[in-house]
Length: 172
Image 1: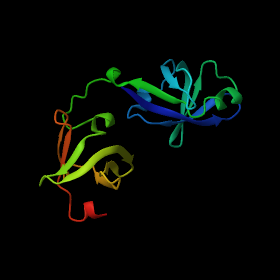
Image 2: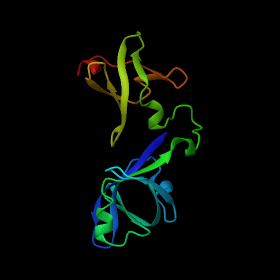
Image 3: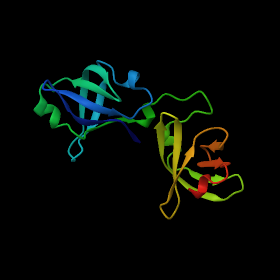
Image 4: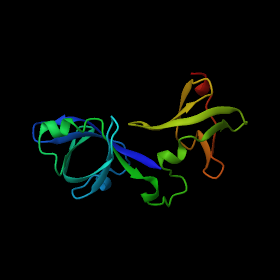
């Protein structure tokens, strides 16, 4: 399964640098000089491999220079490109209470009383911590803090998450 680890937002400056939204929990390990990235163009087309020449932080984004992308026009042509990795390439997680986002997305969520809540649509990483965006069959969404006081159990084998929501959480 392909996982998105970054997306080209725009060109930065006139020398071919790219402003990239990072979507990985290990940006320092994934986006380093010499690393090879697999890119899928936003408007279709064939995937390409890119070699990173340099990387630097810029606010909540990274500025990346790729081999062969030497000016603003070449950088602009990559706008919207998604950088991908195969989930099989990810190292195993040793801690039984830690998960990759893609492992949680699609899991069924129910309360400790057995009431179905919905399916995890997305894992949101915020300054306050992680949230599970849980969507019910009607499309309504509730944000569930991914903390041990609320998320009682996660079973990868059963593709299920059990929560003990505080009063009112599911009514929002």
